[in-house]
Image (cartoon, rainbow, N blue to C red; front, side, top):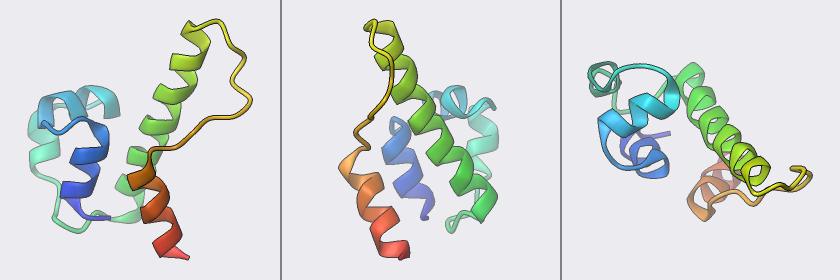
Length: 79
């Protein structure tokens, strides 16, 4: 995954992304352009965690979540 893709999926700015991932914006700015698997996993986990929390806040038991189209596209390209 490219860093720009991760930033787009997680909110577009490094401070917001850092908050969602659990680190600082400065740490996000140090990410390489091609993210290693461990960082890709953190990006995907943050997206899924936020979707599940959003459903819980609406009083729904999260049984099915809808992933963002950009994440689905990335996952489909990986094969």
